[in-house]
Length: 216
View 1 (tube, one colour):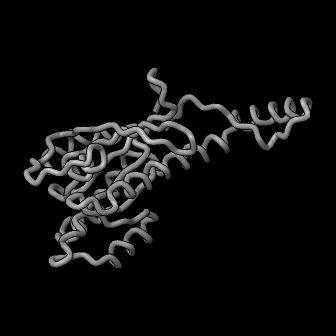
View 2: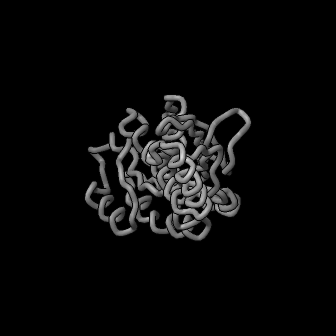
View 3: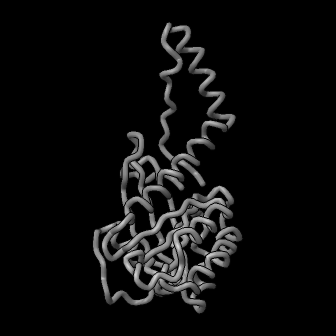
């Protein structure tokens, strides 16, 4: 994703996926604007919000897409995976069927996105402990077997919502940084600058490559 004229250095697209009524829209609204709506209606197609955060002194703009979970909208939303570099796969801890759908959502994600996409499994509605239908251990087990980050959240009382999104954003940043560090162009530029710095008598370890954009 490219940088915008407004000055942010990174623009990341993140998709929030999962069955209908697992709380995707409220997770996003809680994170983006600290709001929660008990009467939230099902998302039709795709909606998105943009949040700016700072990581290691870099301004990061996260464009977070809330996708419809209903089967009849699946063909419409599949196109919106394009360009995504992060994904939250959400299920409702009080509805086992939504947890059983995780494998299907992961399959769809893998079909439409690069394998390097930062992925986090989110067990939402942990405030409903009295009617829990999926244990924490089950969530962790699936996450470990699929190589995912895992966290339980509550959009209702804000538990871990900010943490969940920040894990995804930071992992995307780290993924992009690793790609840049391993790229031939970065290594070539670093080598040239090390030579220049050495001639100037400076410490080459202090060199930083200035980045104005990133690509997925």
